[in-house]
Image 1 (cartoon, rainbow, N blue to C red):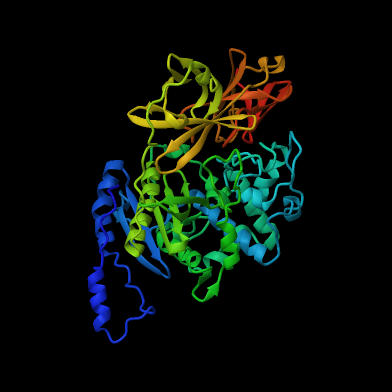
Image 2 (tube, helix red, strand yellow):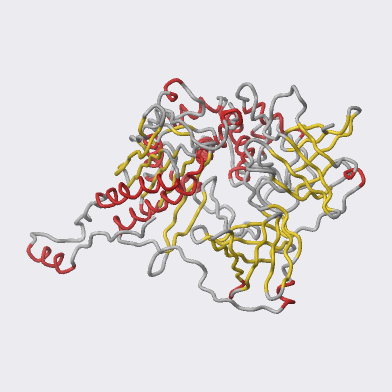
Length: 586
């Protein structure tokens, strides 16, 4: 994106002259209305170029200021083959943007005293049960909505021949193990929001879709929003574009995971949701959410948590302090979403009553959608207040050699987003190796290390949090984030060594989100590699054996801590992972 354009400025002398000759010039004079015309013109030039450069087919956006939608527009194509242009009324799949709606529904039930954020989930969902390897506090709605409940990220059932009910999804958790004790760390979990959606059903006595229609979509006049494709929606639904072959797209998976990622809607509809949020919970004269509920949704729930480095979360909403030129910050709350060929983002600056919604129908558009949403807000803030969001910048540090003993502090095996990574001292630098990826980490001031991934610079640092050694990545726009943790897995028991090999979903069974698992030995480490239609190549993790028949994914963070269960049967061994059961291949 280009730098922010200059906003119109009113001359101080002109203001003084106007007051001198006016009949009255007092403190009650309303400020001039923001003029967004130049903002629109700038984006109308830039967005088509950005779409072409990124290979994105279509995009729609809406900008809200206070109680007015000041700009909504579509760019590119909703359906290339049919010749349909994208408009503000085009319906897109929004993925995890659904989570902020689920959180809003929960708060409506809290307001009605049908549920409490901190009561054990078993009191909200009678009969709820999961397996656990540890003791700890109860799962609550608060811990679910902040991804601190220790729930596995994802379950199988993606290729079910029909949408699964939330009751069925939650019932399937009975044999699944929790990944972490409640409150251990932020570990993103779609399954956690499926549980929260089921809690909406049991607390309200209504199915989730009906509750959302009656209590959110209806009052907000979101007439083309739903958690399932309806005939009315299908007429406006954008065609999705991406590299995934049609046969690899799970047909009902998003519908089965509605509260976590199954929302469909338009930027026109979502602008009504934003209007409600920016007006203390009111829309069309109706109080949809109480102001106190909004405060709780946007209150930092994990302040001071040692393992949540760089992540600040309310109830579903992610929280940021955006730096301004000249000092100071402005609060932004947001949530993005990806939904197989679709991307979306909703972001607000509540104190300035600004909000934006951006949606696209191309799988590779995530970075563009998120960046555009932030840029629209930044330029709108300048138009409305004159405040300028500071340009992102890399850490202002210089190379600084460190003695080998200091570098050796951070060596070892790490579980990272790039897979198992071995970090060692090599000369004056650290070298990190993860599969075919080799990174030279050059020490800089303030504990930073600089490396390159392809042509892009990457800044890393290490941090000790209690007994955990954390590997952090630093983004110019997002700040610090957890990339991995140092691990020391237990030795491989003979029971697991006997199970090494390849496992697949048996022929004739319904296809699953996992196609195959491979258990292997890497110098005494138990490795698990898995493939599936939604994974870009094999995903490899280190397993930490937790017994003869259980092993957990080593490390901290999203997808880690999840349990692999083994069972030795007459017809051979089987493994269950992410709710999918696979059998040893011949």
